Length: 416
Image 1 (cartoon, helix red, strand yellow):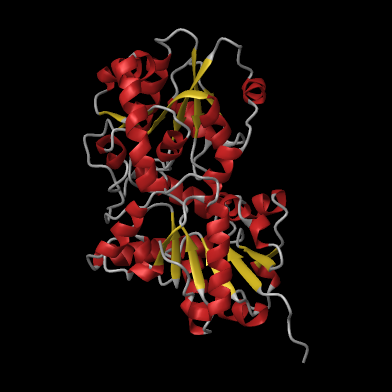
Image 2 (spheres, one colour):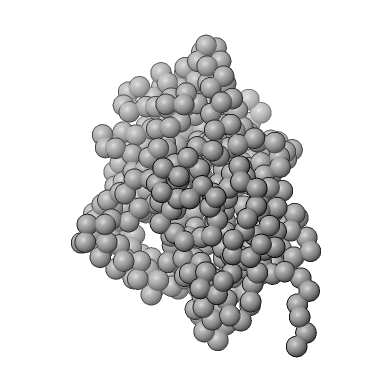
């Protein structure tokens, strides 16, 4: 039997963000065979579309004789399995199958990590969205399975968390020492957690963005300045109600209208609907809702980023932009330490009352002292949360992948 000469990487993304993160380091993996598994049949979050755009070879899961992780790992015989999330049942099944087969597994951090269990709100907003997904999604079985799992966890007093450490990946490539410390405090062995930086963000910061192209696509005048509202799918996740999100969107829209030459651009989460946000906006509002423009392009072009809990806050800080964190619900944030870490770290201002929003916007946009403090605080904050931001994160992650392949399941590479 002829032996394969090149090592094989099996990549299992569940959304377009995972593809973009992995795509940023593909050039560094030259000499390795790469195959992604397309799971749009079960989770339609534009992963396969983005795989095509990035020209990453992939095979839809339905093309296999058995649509199961154990079978696919057995057929493909990878030297490593890579995921962007190892607590979703689909990717978790691949991690478990690879671990059982003695194949090393790597989780590449895909967003700011939360460590608080949260309760979903079983309300009309959430129920309507679940029914809509069951009607529209091809993977109805997956939606039902996830719903049942969440219900059972709630009944036994173990509500679902967003904690990555509940997964079983051999190693985790994380963005900063802050995240590593958090994992270690939760009982994860330090050697499992490797600080690499964020490969997608690191690559994007080296890129020359065409601000004029962004303005052309948004049909903005030269004197107009952009305020980005980036959301996180909190209603879709059952964490906020429709009314709570509507209050936030309308408050931001009304506040932006108070400033001359400012224009609001709303960038919904991939799970969210453009139509839903247009309904949230007051009649006659000048806001633009977009999903097909790259977030980093918008951040680079904007004067201010506003969000509730989105990782976009951290990414905006990396681009040197001021950030406002909004929560008008009167409730705790559904996650910790983010987004409160941005406020405590001095890279964002928090707004809890609708009536305070215009004043806070004036401070971050016009007050020299506030702008100076935000800039100063970014220096140490970004080192803690995003490592070196030296443009070399893709090389560090790729190096870890190669080390893990060479060393087998142990993956004994240099630990930061």
